[in-house]
Length: 120
Image (cartoon, rainbow, N blue to C red):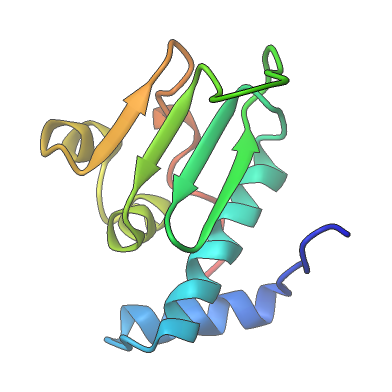
């Protein structure tokens, strides 16, 4: 069964709560999952896996699809960094320079896809 889709209103509300200082796990989880969902919707594909543990991971970006094992293009970061990237509060190059993002593979640069179109 596919994961439950988060409605935009629910995602926007969770993101707004986090941006206003909420540290409640449900707000953070929903904001991360929704923003990753929006990334995957806006940049469909299977060549890059974007991971924000422990909340979610999505595959996005057009290109070759991997079928088994660890994908060749992986981006991993924490929730706060991901939300800063997704909203444009942090630039990709800054996050990489500060070692706040682990990115491996030739397609793992998300500069062209950030900030995510969240409509907040």
